[in-house]
Length: 69
View 1 (cartoon, rainbow, N blue to C red):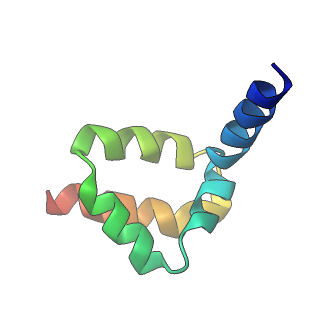
View 2 (cartoon, one colour):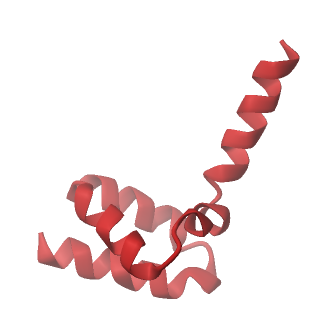
View 3 (cartoon, rainbow, N blue to C red):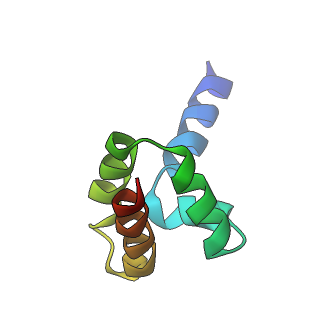
């Protein structure tokens, strides 16, 4: 059971928006990831990212991607 808890903890840490963006080496990589999602997916991501002022640039990418769909 310990290993399951560790996996869950790691996943929860990863999905925190400020940690999640670190997965991408460049903003262009994040943009490409956004392009794979649906409008609904992107709206959900945007909702989470809006809580973090330091992710403003990523929010702008999400909004732009939504408008392009």
